[in-house]
Amino acid sequence: MRRTSSTIRQHRKHRSAKTAAALIAGALALSLTACGGDDDKSSDSGATGGTETGTTVTLPKLDGQSLEVAAVWTGAEQENFKKVLAEFEKRTGAKVTFVPAQDPIINFLGSKIAGGQPPDIAMLPQPGAIKQAVDKKWAKPLGADATKELQENYSQGWQDIGKVDGKQYGVYYKAANKSLIWYNAQVFENAGASEPKTWDELLTTAQTVYDSGVTPFSVAGADGWTLTDWFENVYLSQAGPEKYDQLAQHEIKWTDPSVKDALTTLAQIWGKQDFVAGGADGALQTEFPASVTQTFTGGDQPKAGMVFEADFVQVNIGETEAKIGTDAKVFPFPAVGSAAPVVTGGDAAVILKDSKAAQALATFLASPDAATIQAKLGGYLSPNKNVADSAYPNAVQQKMAKALIAAGDDFRFDMSDQAPQAFGGTPGKGEWKALQDFLKNPKDVAGAQRKLEADAAAAYGG
Image (cartoon, rainbow, N blue to C red; front, side, top):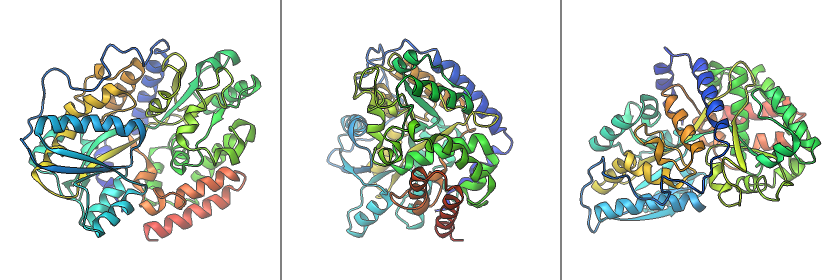
């Protein structure tokens, strides 16, 4: 599962990713703070599903054909995606069934394939998983129509991370901006706290919130992937893009001094029990959805004032009474080094059973038509550059989408998603477990580094 990041690095070499990250983060800082009065529940874009007037992709008639699509999505995210599948059914006459998968999805697919019942398409959340699916001869290349749709709608960088050995296998249907911190606006107002732009300012803001009587941070320690996102943002900003790429490919070891620096920085928050809701023990029992909802419930005395995670936090905020842009606001992850980080993630549609219907669905998912449906529903970003900004249901999300597209090819994909799944994508193992252990004992930086390196060496093959 070495993925195809070498090709990504090649087409990035002529650009200054660090400069681009600074520009994008600056644009986010300006745009997000300008959205204070927006309400995600009162949109004029009609967040009810359906497509814009007219269509941009031609699909075949598939009456009587059936498809299964597997993904790990749950709750509102799953329901919103089902609306996209319903539109495909309406246009083609095919029947599409959503198959709930479990993490790690590669293991789930392995059992399905071993039983002779693979889904037609799987939504894979790691580039490394795409590579593994190709290596196992599960994945089928995209046909001409889907590839053409990708070329028309996606930057080269988003196309390339769906390729293996030069062949296109993945359609990155969903993207994430993983460099955001959401906060309870009432808590900040009561405390007299302001949005920070640097790590030192973040620590000051956290102390101000704490002094007002509210715990600063909600941390979803029960889900190891959130902890990898914390690390990646600190590491990218502090160590820089070149080191980030090297560590992502295990070209440098996790015992490198740059990792020590990042963990030491993280410990300034994780190691201060009063800064984390429930302390380390409480955080390790807090799953991601609860980490969000407990930040935006309880009036002006919630369990925490801030929660770090991607744009999809909006889906979980939607389960509370808080209104995005009014009660729930957001700022870019602060700069630890010279530039604020810009980390992205995503989910790619990969065909496992080749057929006319499967290729048609992949083509549809690569089109602006499909992405526009889910964009209107909120809690979603598309890397498809031909989705109109107006499709997103509030100004906060519109500006985040615009910034994602403005990044072009100058983004850094989630590091753990680039790693072999045994290291970067398995609950209770590898990086997820090592960082959970570090959250529990943030004083043991050297021990965390040794554990991370031992697990990485085993997963990467030395």
